[in-house]
Length: 446
Ligand SMILES: CC(C)(COP(=O)(O)OP(=O)(O)OC[C@H]1O[C@@H](n2cnc3c(N)ncnc32)[C@H](O)[C@@H]1OP(=O)(O)O)[C@@H](O)C(=O)NCCC(=O)NCCS
Image 1 (cartoon, helix red, strand yellow):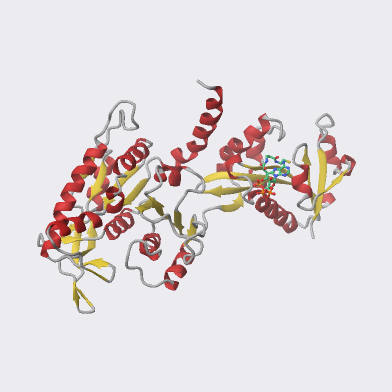
Image 2 (cartoon, rainbow, N blue to C red; image 1 turned 90 degrees about the vertical axis):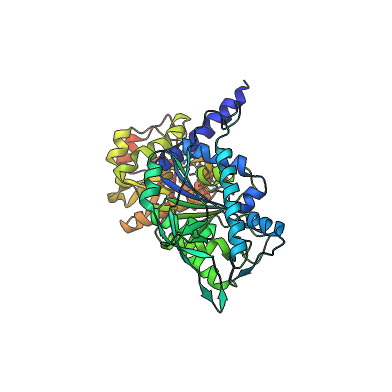
């Protein structure tokens, strides 16, 4: 085995660990468009879902079937009819939908039953259970248009789904619902997935779609994907766009993400099925690849508590080992937890810095400034510094100082100037390690 492999695989695998721990026992609802299946992506998506499930996530999979129903209609010489962005389901379309759903369920169950040696599914045991979990009501008449057998979700059998999940099974739901009189209604995958996510209060709702996510400038198809969209911004964006009628309209999936978010689902994602492994990239990588709609900015700078000590230790340990930071005992960090400021994203600590005041000298030391290697150069270091400065000012201090052996230029660029170690407050000077020969840099607070 190449030794380079060890140096890439091991740190990479460890970087995923916080997410594995965090998501264990959480519930994700995944909305899989019929287009993804039509594009031949089912096998690889099933592999990724099986892996996510093996890492302890409870999964509800809702499949769509838009192209498959249209294909059945075409074979019968009929045309698909839509209005207000919804299918009009006449008796022929209902027949086609039932046929398409039956066929797709069979294909999805087959995909989860793969297990050839030397494939990611080897050894996987995904038990797929479907059922009549959805009660529906008719869409009825809108602006004089009769939607016939098209329906909307009226009720979700949360208890039935929860019990099935607790058994360790993957719940598979087709976009069908039944009225109390036993009448079948054709539903939209997006409505079912969103309603299920809200009813279960799932931790995530993820749409695997034909679009790459929501662009920073919705009118510029070349602009970057907005990886994190706060709920208020998502609502503003939808209000500024024409009503979405086709799935490629930017507001189409977004409106469901907003509904989920307003209904208490903390994170809703829109990710592209075209990119192989997009589910894994979105869930287990810091910035993800699609758009995540969140109730508020998830990345927050805040003061640490005793519960954050393990995260802080894990973050600074590699830098202590390579000599960038001075070694601190865990008990010391526990004692001083209140001095630390941290940056947290999605429950994982990505950055920290501590403030140790010397009130008599009206100054304070900023120590242990660290940003985790995978999120450096995104401004987090600067955000921590600003927060530390604010904390120092709030205590009536006039300057902050740092001791550094390797990061001098970073501080100089941010307004620090080098001084002689004699400048240090007496109490700090006594602890100064003359062997380490750290440079002392001071920044005056305005
Ligand atoms: C120093 C550190 C906290 C900066 O965090 P960060 O989130 O990457 O900082 P920002 O995003 O605000 O700034 C990034 C910029 O700083 C530069 N930078 C990073 N480390 C640097 C260093 N040691 N010396 C000089 N510049 C540095 C980057 O190249 C980047 O420059 P650019 O914006 O021109 O591309 C981070 O690199 C770190 O944790 N380093 C290891 C621990 C350490 O040295 N702590 C200081 C102990 S006194």
